[in-house]
Length: 341
Image 1 (cartoon, rainbow, N blue to C red):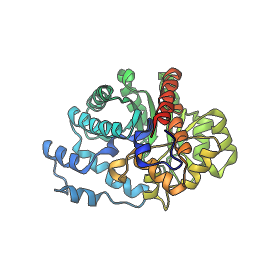
Image 2 (image 1 turned 30 degrees about the vertical axis):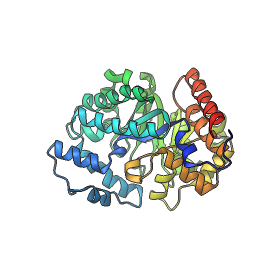
Image 3 (image 1 turned 45 degrees about the vertical axis):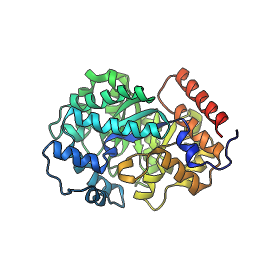
Image 4 (image 1 turned 90 degrees about the vertical axis):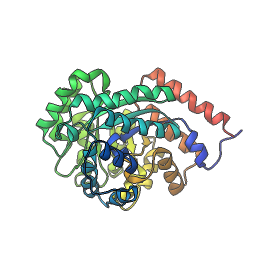
């Protein structure tokens, strides 16, 4: 029994891991999209799985979002949201995911008249039932940064009755002209309500470093989503390392919206002791769930099995679970590595 020098797909798939950057709406697989459209009597431009797959084409964040949001129109009822999350959680379990903190975008649904309660209710029911197949699942409410701060504030207040079902809040969607500072008051209020905080700092955006600085120094987030442009500022790298702030990196999706997966930056941060983690982002659109993201990075960057294990350990250490639960999951990783043949 020994750790393989180079990680195999079998080793990565079975390795216990947490997923911390996963958009539930981004797990809408073509077959489920068609099923929900038919169930809800919604006309969509596609009629076959192949046609839906062909529509999932983009080469930038903006072009991705132009496909992403219209696809959500098929999500209407509480059962729809349950079915979407349940399908993802089953798939995550097959990839060795033991704990997941899942993003959801209520504004994308409430603007269409879907009740907030139906969105969070369906997602939470699936999250609770995931314990039956070995996955501990939590929810993170994300605000759409290309909507107004007032809309975010109203959504935050709407979440208050469901506070026990939501672990924290985040910020996603189009970063252009929508810096973290735009939502400073909303996130301060979220902190007052007891939420943990994270924000997207997407790769290669105009003003990336200033946005990263804002989330760390001004907003005071508990984690950063994406954030790999931080390598451009060694002082900020040292700050996140010293604070133990996790970065939730997504190699496969990076390769779709930019010219590469940012493997050089991710590995540089990993080897500098920053708690970088590997995640799947919107896997139905980018074609790779979390184990595929680990494998893609390992192959592209020549990672050792030991470095892959470090990434898995980082995923729990950067998560928002108790120290006791973190210790238990880290022991689970050590046992898996010791027993792997």
